[in-house]
Length: 305
Image (tube, rainbow, N blue to C red; front, side, top):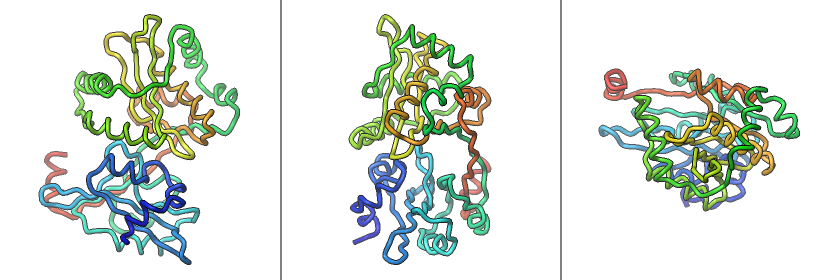
């Protein structure tokens, strides 16, 4: 039996892992994936799922779209570079490799020693363990007043994601901003269907008094955290606090579910970062490691980005 088959069948192992490490998630976001499992005293102590792509006749290992983190994951163990080295040697050769390990472990010494370069992303985390009143008190006062006002004017409902409408609004936002839209309705539908089947997502719509949908947000969650994944606002019927109200309702739902953290899947874009920061979360900067071995891929990065 292959390690991938063992991984898929070992529910006690999967129960310890984030949603982005689940086989059903990897099936939804990639066409080819595998996993390395390192054992110590007959117990799994490290797992390393990875996805494989072929492009320009090169093999690539990259973190899939919509996947917050994917890389070596230590199971209730401190970082052990000896175990990490064992796993690393089992990785397939790749012309380009980029990975985003969970930020709870510092793997910089290992990967920088292997010739990887690091750049940093940013998110904001809300600790959900305090009482809701304490979480609410940490939100910017102006932001909370606007949310409370919106609660009197608007209705938030949990529903199934309307993929065509959501994709239309989101792709339109990217087009108006002059940015490349990297998602497809097929990918959005695939992750939504897989997550719904595994009771791992929340979709919220906000509606006005006439029943018009003003915005949609889609969240993913696992045993510890809820992740703010996708958001789209009706370009024709805008409300200044529709997005904030949706986010606050999701935070409240995450608290009700007994989760430990709400992860904004943040951004360093000033306007978006300011919005996320206003909810009182803790800023977390985390590394993304990459290494390019292929001269062809280096040329592609230099010319095409």
